[in-house]
Image (spheres, rainbow, N blue to C red):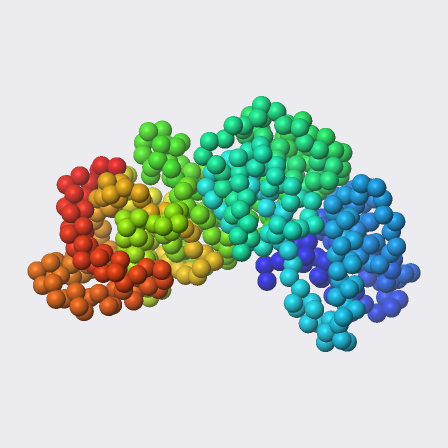
Length: 528
């Protein structure tokens, strides 16, 4: 299981204590996990008084030992101590009190050890709003839309304030959906010249907020930051100097703001968020490309990336939440699924036709990839090993404005590289249909313009079958009676809401639409 170090250290320490024999010396090494240290100090005092048990860890943890923290008070509350309620208690302490009360009430209703085990199994751990702050930072600086699973509106976590802060100051909206929250940046943001915030109750939000302000040119006047000197690093100094200093929150905040973080420095992220290390690359035409085209911009971004893997996606897609948890050690390219959805409550006929066409394309993409003979992929949702991409860069046809994903697929197959597929709803990104017929035709002609450059046998064979079958439908319309049921079943697997009438209309017009875009693309292969 890919557990954060904080959780693993605590888990291993509690297992060691469970096996400990009374009177025998025991040393528990806690790395740089302050949470484990504070909890175990209280735990040993309550449950192992006088036992020769030593808590130790990294040098920084020993430096922090004895520094003021709310975690010790929280640990005392969770151990059942009668800690007096103070005026203006921090959200962290209030959360500890509520958690202790909830568990106590639930335990009273349990019927013996079996009931306790059932309670532990059924208890759903709420996701961390502190960790969400780096995705808010990312969206504020890069745009796009993300779904963050497991976050709740009704929460005791003080760091829930990140939603309010980023909405008011940085134009990032939060929408609560069944699986968690959906965050996105509004199109036009009026940033404040300065921002005053009190971090007394939300110190863990400081790195993300401070670096967001720095990147956007906003003067941040921060108060209540005294305790930041005693975290995994002196975070006031680390933010000012853009240093990681073996601090997991600093590494994530710097990465989200596109500051360089070495692979070695990224290792500390495992302390709380092991899956954060996939670096996002969003190739946008006209952005950072020196007027040399999208592929040049993409190559430049990938060469500057510091992770082993990069997640390619377009800047206008809704990104899947689960990609951050993928294990990627045995693949060079991972093809991920896409789904097309309209933003309108009642999509237009053009949008419905695009949704149906896209569903059929995606089903074909996933089927062939699962069989080890991939013929399509999309740079709108794909993960590639950085070094593998660089090895194939010379085969991406820079003279053409499109096709970096498909030419990459070809080059990887030619070199015998490992191509995987992850076809599941939690890895599906959402794309939007085009709203005008002109834009749709130009896009499809751009796609068709690269067809003569394909050399992969599977891709050429699949393309030839599509052309032949559609030509046969034009000269022999009754073939539709055989062709339609097969293709309708395929697209329904990807778009359950598509009606048979829309699918049939697409089937009738598709041969003429396909041939028209193919001829237009071949005549103007370099037109964007």
